[in-house]
Length: 92
Image 1 (cartoon, one colour):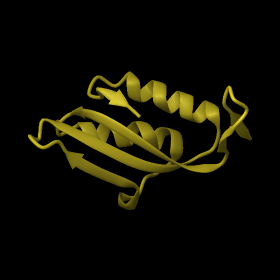
Image 2 (cartoon, helix red, strand yellow):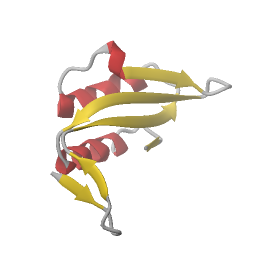
Image 3 (cartoon, one colour):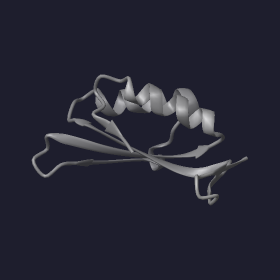
Image 4 (cartoon, one colour):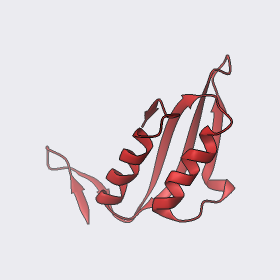
């Protein structure tokens, strides 16, 4: 399935590699909760799929997780669940 933008250009050709970047205040549960949400939509994650980086002062954490996106509805549901997580500030 292809996703087309308003200009008629192809954005995604499913299934495809897809990176999700999540930001939140540094908290011992942030990574665990984010990984739990994503694995609920995509299956078990391996450590090679997950990268974390602290802000310069350590106040915020950025978590990047690489998945294989199967379809648009999967990405929409995943994004919605991540945005509803109280520990997540925003999702890219």
